[in-house]
Amino acid sequence: MRAIEYSVTGEPDVLTLVDRPLTEVGPGEVRVRIHRSGVNPTDWKSRRGNEAGTAVHPAQVPNQDGAGVVDAVGQGVDVALTGRRVWLWEAAYQRPAGGTAQEYAVVPVRHVMPLPDDASYDLGAALGVPFLTAHRCLTVTEDGPDRLGPGRLAGRTVLVAGGAGAVGNAAIQLARWSDATVITTVSGPEKGNLAGLAGADHVIDYKQQDVVAEVRAIAPGGVNTIVEVWPAASAPVGAAGTPPHGSVAVYATDGGPTTKELFEGLAEAYRREIKRRRHLEEARRRAPSPPHPQSPPVRALWPAAAESLTLKVMVLARMADLTMIFLATTGVTFVLSAVAILVR
Image 1: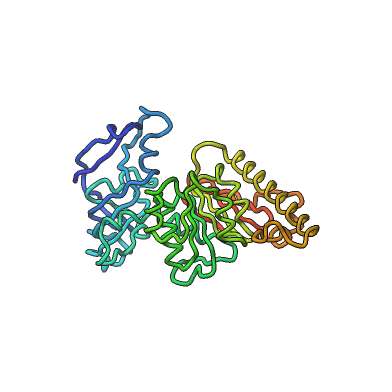
Image 2: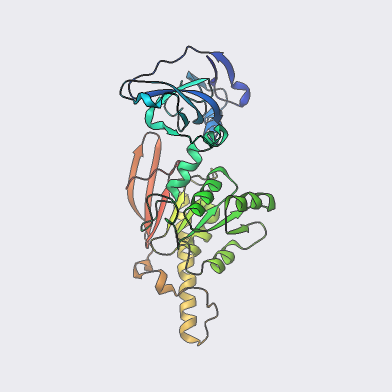
């Protein structure tokens, strides 16, 4: 069968077309004839590696996501899956020969999901990593749902940073489908149009508008969940917009600060916000007419524990090559994960 692989890190020119033997299925596995192969940032970032020219052995067949038809099943797998249309996720993870950039891919059966007859292979190949990540980001809030669907997020407000990106756009669609009020940030009109088409109720151009002021005006009581792609730059927004028991789900960073620097920056942003709200509360006590009626009282949002704003590491877990750190600060949960997989 034909396959694309790379045996050295670098730009797209390291990808080569080769002939590979058809892989036999093992117990608990299925073989899928690939109709569409999806490309995610994790795919091309892995191909680039930390330095161009680094040998990759064995050679890697890229691409985590895809869609196609089950061609064969292994021992212990329901034979009724044969001939079914499916979409795949994380096909290449820890499997050099497993990526979807080939005619047939063999993956564990839990990595394939039914693809409805009225859904295109293009759609199926676009699900995988983006939608699974978005779903996890939207289901980490302390008193929120662990599954999404109509009505599951009714009465809640979700802020999605970067609503035109793959995960951001997926988060908008899933949140809107679940009846949340969705706010998103974008960098221009064209991206704003994409976010609006996905279902965002409020689109904020962060290059032209004051995001903090706009979020406060839309959601005076704060937002329940923030889906975050650029935490260092967006820390003031999270601090201003997250009430107790809210969540900031960080699924990526811009590659700037280290994890320690990132959370130190978030902590400092929350300290400034607490100080600002205390000043507002003092002003309310002294004046009959509060200067900012839409800003909630500081005591309603920040308990006495906010005096020192201590960041406490709740869980530090290592799963494969992903490090997940969960921190709590005055009732606000931070989740940092490359794919937003949460261990509770």
